[in-house]
Length: 330
Image 1: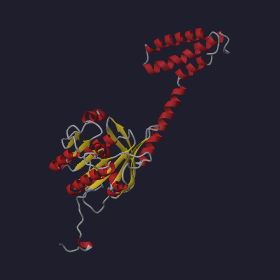
Image 2: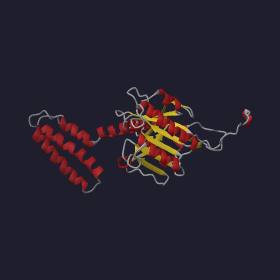
Image 3: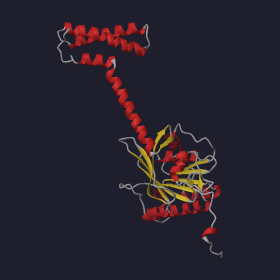
């Protein structure tokens, strides 16, 4: 039995986390450690167990695959029990992981949870991802002679024991209740280090990632993200707000341009006579004028300039026709 240590005698662990190649993710995941040479910014704290929940379409699988791609020098494994590997590949396409330290398993390669536990004990991956804990419990609780809730707890305990000993990081993907809470015993949430939530609002298209009920190892921060071709791009709240504002400005500019073009003015002029009895003949004549004018200008100008000049000049001829019909004043 060793002797107790004074606080000053306790050595700081310099190798406390796994850094990814994504700096924004590192900063979001855990606190900045100013007195440590490594890591400079948080990253994924070793010996951490993280529950991951999220709404449908939020990108839980995509997020986990991206994390695996960001740690080329760290061994990782993804155990899929809700999808086959070919389905995951199709879902992520054209995204690729460009290193050989990321492995994927499913119910075909490892039919039972015990098979998977044997695999990780033998191969010692540092990052373990399970999707989902409820799927495993639902399929295997009877053979274990347990309730589903007890099976969920059993799975969490076994994975936690492994990851603490390995000094790695464990992500357990789980289901939500209708209230947005983790579906299962409260004990499970109490025994993990953090609860990562991925949220997708289908109406607005906004995606955000935040810590839910707890995060023992870092700040309770929110980050926004977008998925492009399977790759995730993160924005802090200020960056995302500026991005939205810029997008709205661009939309307003484009709408203003579309309202003020010679083409839109010409079309609006013609449309005002649509209730006139002879509108069909009038509209046909207008189309011929526009078509002929366009052909003439396209011979000497590029498409955009030709269209602008053609509609502008055609409008004068169309107005004369409207005057002849008695629909407009000269």
